[in-house]
Length: 322
Image (tube, rainbow, N blue to C red):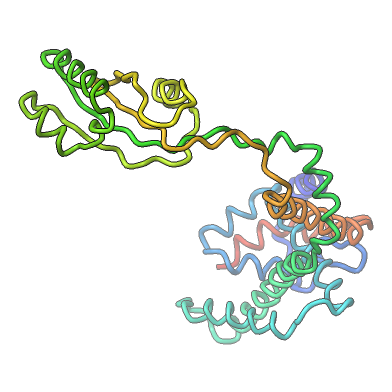
């Protein structure tokens, strides 16, 4: 918006202009960003950061526009009496107190007072801006969005489909090439005689001890869904819709896996009541952002005026302030 103009002015008028703290840098309608406003932000930066920050025309533009918007919002909030300014001022004082308490600089008392006054004014703008954002959040009504939420649900109903999931348990029995066939035959015989005994891990360990095989019972897994991250495991589990121990044996990573289907939760579409809160939250966020942006747009329709001398002096000003 004003970036090209800032670059042009800085290039044409790159001189150490002396500007007063109350000189405006840019203005729009009744809102003015003064040098004092910029100082309030700049003085919060470490000295070694400040100079480089204001060497960038893009950062200068962004900073000026942000402060201009904060000025607009502050004036609007005060005019409409929308906020508890006493509370905001108390919060600002707390923030400033914390800054002062860790200040070890050597400036004299008068210079510090001037500096902290500017910083306080900047913090007040920033905290009021945030308070207005919270005001929009607190005053957003779910009731007004309910019909829109229902419409959103009907249009996107299939997007709320939950895939089929399984609750399961499994036993893992490790093998090597020497004992693979013996262990496999042992499992097959158990499948024929008493499948449930395969989940008696203590007995399995004793009976397979001669093979020095590692036997593990996995904890029950709930809500497992088909995933390409574990394709063999998923395909094996979902091959049947029957509950109980799957008679086939999964052979993977030098382990035999015996698996039990405990529960099958079919694929289903969540009801509106299931997803109402999440839809309303999303719609509310979008509305808050839209309403706040509309407010900013309505407050910033006037043409932006630029003080070219002040713009030109910004970079040199913050080179000279330590």
